[in-house]
Image 1 (tube, rainbow, N blue to C red):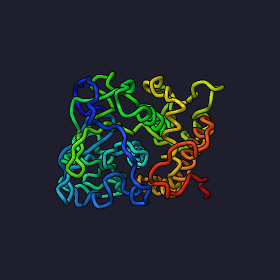
Image 2: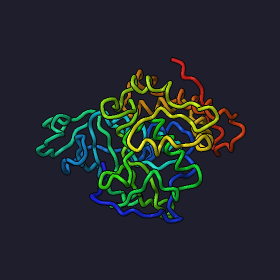
Image 3: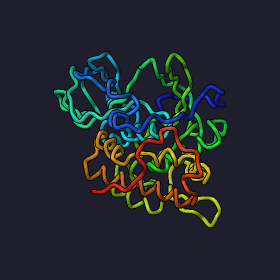
Image 4: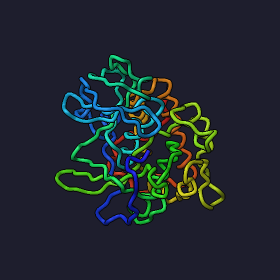
Length: 331
């Protein structure tokens, strides 16, 4: 759900970024996400307020290190935690997001929606913690971007993000056309003293289930995700790729081309399946769910390779070529 109340529609400046060379495929990156393990939420947590925006229960809390966090509960927890890791591994921006299996919020006040998830003494289970108020990455209010904006990134970077959206079955692709409700955001990011504006998708809660229209789609449903996988993508007789994905603005996602897929594939095929499973477990998935989602993600990547029918050696390899290649996960 959009954090701001209205949007400024504009063209991205030259110093804005949609994509950058992804980090090394390490187990830490998958276990702790883009924020790193050292920045994990530190108990005890102190209640600030209940956040009643959006459609899921949320709290704002402060941790032992004085950092502010948005804590979300419910079906969006696993998708949001895992997507932050997967999106980062593909070179796109994601907010630091952590899964906390259980904890306690001190000084809890009277709750409305969150009372179903947080006990009167402040104890909770399965929370998604997302950093707020960090000077290193600032959510730029009243700014968004659209899936039709060709000024973003290089020739295939926007198309690559469309592929990632479909790969994770994120059907909630609202953009700057959905005034006041866009899930596409701009962040002001500072790295090594240099400031850039980073474009990204900030809400991945509708991911990792079935795509489709209102009565079919869901989220955090590994069985439904697996059932959709055989229809993910196929070549269409030498013409445009045929994507099975259906969602908000799906016509502007399913126009991702074979060349977009060829550009993205080396960054996906380098991923170690064991690391992906670790990322899923660190995001709150059970062993069974982690295997289910990991195997389906690998199957979708293989479908893309088959659809573009071009050997991997024909494309520029990502810089982290020492990472383990894509391979089947064995139970």
